[in-house]
Length: 220
Image (cartoon, rainbow, N blue to C red; front, side, top):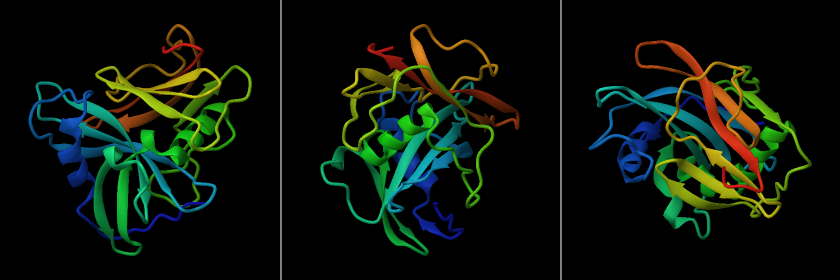
């Protein structure tokens, strides 16, 4: 169980993301974004060492607000071989130095996200310790998934989102630019599983949509 510490971060997560987001191929804006926290959830690391957060942020600098899904992992030491995925470092008021990574490239997040799709773990509230997030939805129809740490790798990071693949042939596409959709809406063609969640638009409207879709033996 992850313990949520209500303390200071220097720089803050939003400050790190403000510098990092414009470097991503899926960033829809131009120039420096003006970010606000809009929602998200957490997953627990079975070993209790890595913080896993799926943060949703909104940017209202353009003609229309844009909401992004930014999965992050927080570590107490650098992750070997993941220099390309480093979002930045920060000083945590309780835990000390923390390395923040684009979680799609972190084997701990990759394994736990697939476990969430399959229903073997539950999404946790973003800011409350030991509380299930009831707004997160998931589904999966198929055989058991390969969730060993290190078995999943990112194969594409493009304007369409981030695609990761596992040795069992399944591919998981993260929808980085989020779009509201009614709950219960049919999944995209070929999808055999999903994770969805809720977030808040800049005008205060609460919406729900797809965060990720799982495809069997296809790139989606």
